[in-house]
Image 1 (cartoon, rainbow, N blue to C red):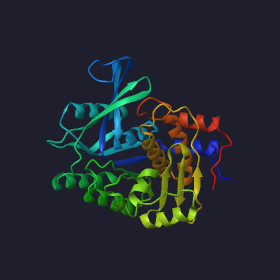
Image 2 (image 1 turned 135 degrees about the horizontal axis):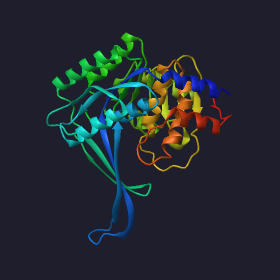
Image 3 (image 1 turned 180 degrees about the vertical axis):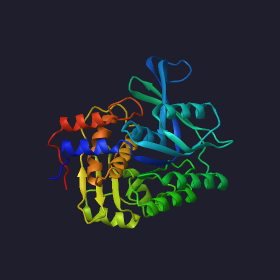
Length: 335
């Protein structure tokens, strides 16, 4: 059974340092309120949470950028934020991680997307969102298209993170795909329902199981190589990577490779928020560093296992990935 050796993993993770990755998509600020709950509100049958800690982090496409930055990549963001207090916080969070914002521009009248999660211990009990999911106006989409084309010139890979919040309109999608083809660099796409079928020609198409089932309006059989290959051809991607939650992920490479079933790394799960972003970041970084889709999937499943063991949307370091590989030495990919 194929597996990745520690030395090879360390080599790839070292190569990630200094590569430039362009991340395009829906930008978000994640806010967390955590405390204890010892009583029920007299006003409604809901717990009263006494908040004793509050923090914020980057979400959506920006969480992918954060993971890439922590791995050592030079990262540029293209997307939109609001001209509001949350937008200022978003920019501060990017500055703290050294993330460039060549195209993360405020759009008048549009709020910064903010997801606020309320936690009791590690358990999420509520979430409230502030956002606009209207498609960008043509002038704003054209500005983003120009930012994508400019930033892609120096990039080793492009990530598209589509959360159906109105940024990934056709003009921006086409710019990302065209730049990937023109510059000969991988384009990794994490899709959502609205424009699921518009990413033909990407290098890696990475839906989760439920997204794929909903888009195809059919049962998903990721364990069947013929089904996976038919689906890959139907979606017109080089590699189809389907994330399966606690069941790991399935990769169908388009270069006459075999179906690879990558089991999840068993860990205590505290919070699954952001695990898919971590997978996207690691797969993209490995491809940009000259690795294979198989190597990216193996390292990504270790990274995702680490991420879900942390509270909230979190990043994962290269050392944590290597430690996980050492802890699971001998683990392999079923093919």
